[in-house]
Image (tube, rainbow, N blue to C red; front, side):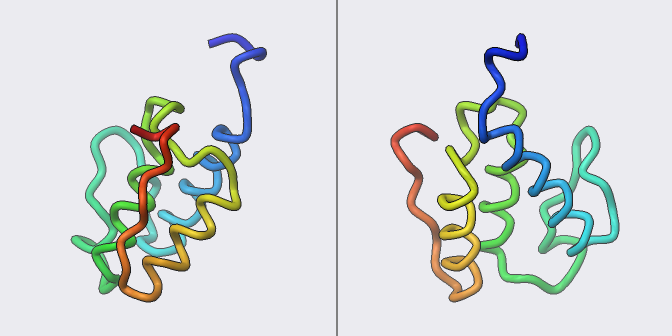
Length: 87
């Protein structure tokens, strides 16, 4: 992927890395466990962080606002709805 292909999803990935490390104390490198297997967090957070950290940018949140809404839903114990861009 060239620099022309980089969009807000790269920032979503970076924020996902920071949050994963904050929750678990580990960097999400290679094959990594969902956060709820390592620490006491709601399983809904797993889906949100794994989506943000997806290797395929097309399957990540389109922007930080979408990511934030999914995090808020996870905090309430709700599942997030995939945007059409993530399917």
